[in-house]
Length: 69
Image (cartoon, rainbow, N blue to C red):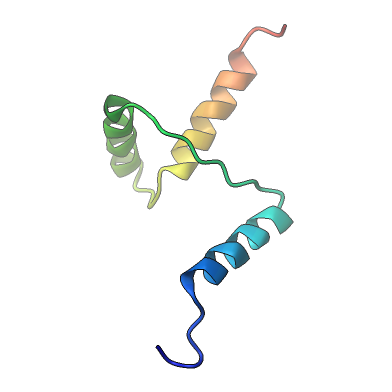
C-alpha cells in the first residue's frame, strides 16, 4: 500500500460525513430477493447507477400517500 492510500474504513467514514453535511442519513436494511430483483429492473429501465434514488422515490411516494395517523 502506498503512503498516500487512504484505508477503506476512512473513505467510508468521510463519505458518510459528506452525506450528513448535505442533510442525508445513511440507512442500511435487508429486503426480500424478489423486491431487489424488481428494484434492479426499475433501476435499469430508468438508467440510474444505484438503487438509492429508486428507493427514495418509492418511500416519498408512500409517505405522501399514506393516511395520516
